[in-house]
Image (cartoon, rainbow, N blue to C red):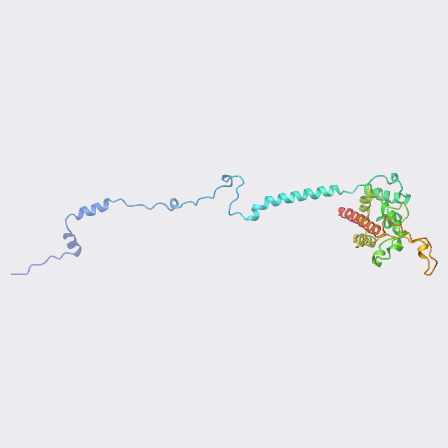
Length: 284
């Protein structure tokens, strides 16, 4: 009996032929499931939350993250504005004034009136002003003198011997070491500011010496209080061994002790120097 030929079947065919029943349903069910499509990338981006606008904040609220210096800026600006206003007000108050006509002031000498009028012309109408060395020299010699300073200066000169207890450096700054001008040769208080304007315009060594003398006048030395002055009569000055007499020494007390006069004179002079320096500084 001859051999039966076997039909060769491919592996794929065998697999399909041995697949269990119902596989078609499974495959069909799998194919019925819809595929999920990925969303576009643009739609998946989430915009970051924006910070609240400045208008949404309550008025006057300061963010906690704001630097302290920024939060204080309005106050600092307000203080600076107030300071500028005070400075302008002070400058207006200290603004130089020409003052009255010097010819109308009683007791003022003709030289003083002309020198003051010379500075008034410079202040009011500089185009019509002309330099006059004689007027400037008068101002430099008398600018520190007022009518009261001249009066006290003459009193100190009369009591010079009573100032011997003071130091030599102090006496060198007092009359009679400091020559006292004649009556009428002084600068009235109401003309100090206009004179200061002219002095500020000066240049060179003359101005340097003037400023140095004004600054030196500001230093008022300490002057001790002195005992009242006494005046001894001739009877008290009798030589030893002379016949006794009924006369007894008498004393007279001065109403203005020289030490007090010296202190008052130096204080007034320092005040005049400060007034001139302030007036010159206002022009800067």
